[in-house]
Length: 430
Image (cartoon, rainbow, N blue to C red; front, side, top):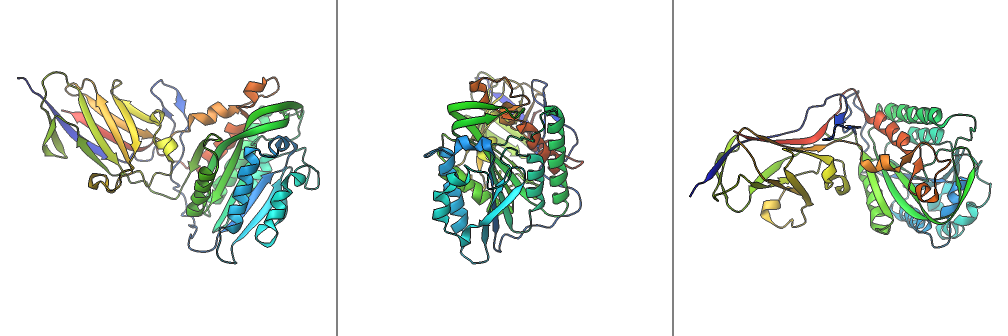
């Protein structure tokens, strides 16, 4: 009986920061999401003191279509405001409510008002012009102002359809969108030089029956449609993540769509362990491991890799998505799972499991697994730079200029050096 003997040297490392963009396996350029800030050390928010919550509700006319009795949007907003109003157990925590349209309009501290009365009449507040110019939503200035207001132990929450409506009919959309992106970038970059904070953007969907305002400020009537909306969460890391967890838990799963998170406060350290499947045995040590395949036949290799992703500031939607990994050789396949059986001693200290299958591994061939640091594909798919002649089916899936908003945050978190991959695992067949 013939046996196949494979020799591996294992290298598990965190990629050093490098500049530039990454390219996927098809050669397409992909925008990288920064994970570290390498400038002057910023102040860290201290999670052990009272948190100040600020909610900013988009009050523009285009939001009216979401505020129908029984809509998913209204239900989510009601739950979130109530939760943040009651989340604190000390009198120093506050929850300020603001409207946003052509500016930021303060409503009041929800901890000092009858929140039930406010929530019961929320549609009334959204059906008149008492709070600012509702015909205009200049997200360029609004987002920068909200970013500027981030302080130690604060969490700012913006609820919006994400459509920048500057009210400039004669200005080409591309010009404004470039200005919008640059303005957000400057705001984030400036704030990060003084203070560490995270930003999470959650995409949801809800029923919409109302007037959609396009880039020319022309109304398009939509009835019985679904439209995306967005919740931006910015501030102290622990409290901000708890807000995001609450939203994920209390919004109907069918109405949650996607999310992306930016974090500059952590160095990434990933540990791993390689487990062999049935039919293998290990000879040697980790620096020069010899994997002995007992079965006669092909050069197929199957490995289980345990990894600890705790220091990676991405959620499982990102970590479990095969598209966010680069794997070579091309016929190698991986499947990623979240570890749920934490009582198993083998799983102790690890968060995820990767199953690797290589149909044919040849001598001197290298196996490489990278968890890439890229912009999620849903951001590009959500974006459009023109919404004048879109059909109803296209309008309900896209948001004018959304990618420019996200790119502003990416640019702001980016410094000269950029991490290409969260981690890289290299296995060499010697």
